[in-house]
Image (cartoon, rainbow, N blue to C red):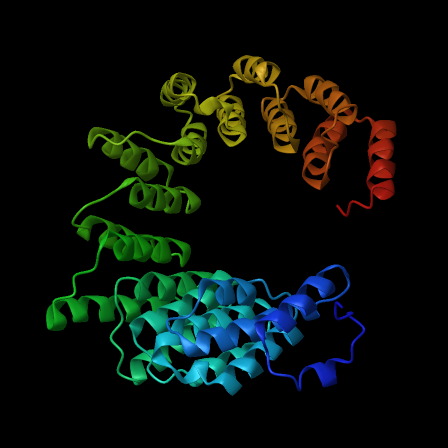
Amino acid sequence: MLVRPTFPRSKLCRYPFQTIVISLVIETSRRNPKSHYAKYLHCQHQAEKVSSKHPCSSQLLSVLSSSQTLGESRKVHGRLLVTGLLHLDTCRVLALELVNAYVSLGSLQDAHLVFRQIPTKNVLAWNALLKTFANVGRYKETLECFQLMLREGVLPDNFTYPLALKACSGLSDLERGREIKNLIYSNESHFGRKANIFVECALVDMFCKCGSLNEARESFDRMSQRDLVSWTAMICGTVQHGDWTEALGLFRKMRLEGFSPDSVIVATVLPACGRLGDWKQGTGLHGFSVVSGIQSDLCVSNALIDMYCRCRKTNQASALFDSLEILDVISWSSLIAGHLLNEEYNESLVLFAKMNQSDARPGPVTIATILPGISYLKLFRKGKEIHCYAINCRIHL
């Protein structure tokens, strides 16, 4: 006779977790889609199996990683405490998975509690904790754990630094980023731990995002070797700070060193071409994007439209626009803005009307873009229509 899911749980928990009984309960409970207890019982059963043979089984890790409520994670936590698994070095991975579950569910207090219960915290354990916080945007907690790690005498490695630097970028904490940079180079001289390309790239990215382009370039020039990611970080940072000439210079240098740009770099460099009116460089990038097949990337296509418009080549921009199979709001807005930039007000209004009939409905950016053209042509009635459209769509201008 199968055990029904309505069997009192308090009584069931008094029985030893024998394989046959647990299998019956789990199988029956699974038939009830509202029951999460099957998962809990499975966790308990796996915990007892793991307690008798180490290291931790992949099944228990899988169950733990799939916990979707705080209650489920706490039940697993309690059972692991009873079986003593959290206090075993051989089951450190299990404890870290529980930390990850708690952080994902927003319970930092529980996460810290579990981490403190790990008997031996080596650099791998600390890295796992830092990664857990950094991946969910808990940058303040990431740096706090990094400082605690240093106070406990654990030496960071090349996996630790990028996580800490990512937190500095997220918080725009330039001073803390500089401290970590000094620590990296200090460890190089004292312990012989040379920073690898991932650490150096993280430094460049951090300085760019924190607004210190000179320090980013200094770290970039100091790199023993560069890859496409490091070039992308440096070029993107330069473009974001409006240094268009420097960005194109870096792009040319990258090409001379034999690197082939991807869609991210092309979409990043094209605005620099447009701002400088460098139509030849932009056309060259257009040709490269066609040959390499990256023009199909909508970000590249939109950047090309914007570049042609800024270089006062609206005919080429319109031709490219018409050739695209997929258009988004940015595609429409870029060409509308391009017509306005080149004082082609009627063309911008015609395009806006077409957009209004398409799948890409005008948003606040598009409406804010078209209003100067309406004002210039003194189309009061058209302006009122757009105003009513914005109100009906709850668009705040």
